[in-house]
Length: 128
Figure 1 (cartoon, helix red, strand yellow):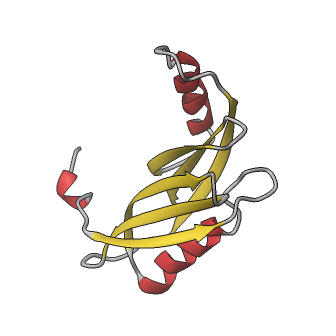
Figure 2 (figure 1 turned 120 degrees about the horizontal axis):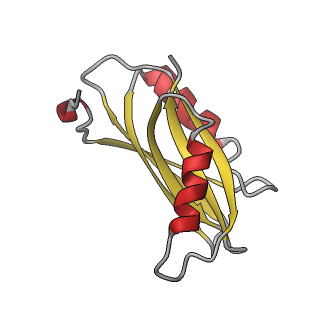
């Protein structure tokens, strides 16, 4: 089942923007999906960093350009405020698992934490 060579990539695109009022990724999700659609990129991964001091979110897209592209979607889900500073991440894992049950065809995921200590999870999914 595993075809790791299909996941390997070395092209990247950077997107940056402000969070929505609900701390979601807002229009960045559309920007990433539009880039993939318009360029025919084969999306493989995302990276996410919330720059608290600048109140900006950076999303990096890892992709290949030597295979056919496919439609993707980024979906942001709040996992709530979680005390994850200790050594037990069971609650975070539980909420991540629950959030994933509402997504189909997950390619990859990322987490970011806001200034209010809210955990948000971004899913990149294949839109088959």
